[in-house]
Length: 131
Image 1: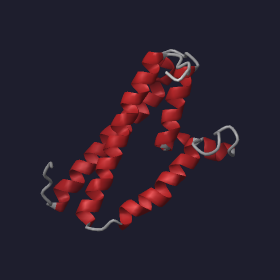
Image 2: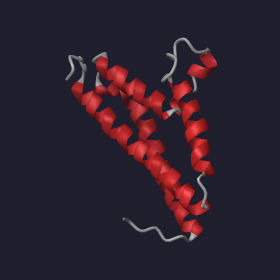
Image 3: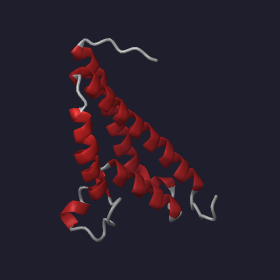
Image 4: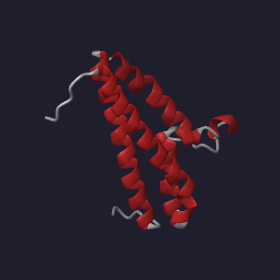
């Protein structure tokens, strides 16, 4: 596709699947926060502050190698940092086992975000219906 060599295609596919799940869970949590609080201010705060900080720490703006070591060590807290690590490992044709730690972190974050979202909606008592 577009002349790009993707390396380990299965690794890229697993990365895409896992990142889709965690981004979906994160978006769901933001929607639930907005619903339960009745204001967009928290979603705006996430959009303009938290997501930008995660992108900076994750290496989306500046490569992690160039950042101070203390900041680079925090890249596991960033969704974009986890995704970049999975994709670069796949493009360097490393085996799937090279990402075991990253996969574990992404799955743990996803499950935690789903549980937090479920508890928030239960505690709020608001009824959520699908469109």
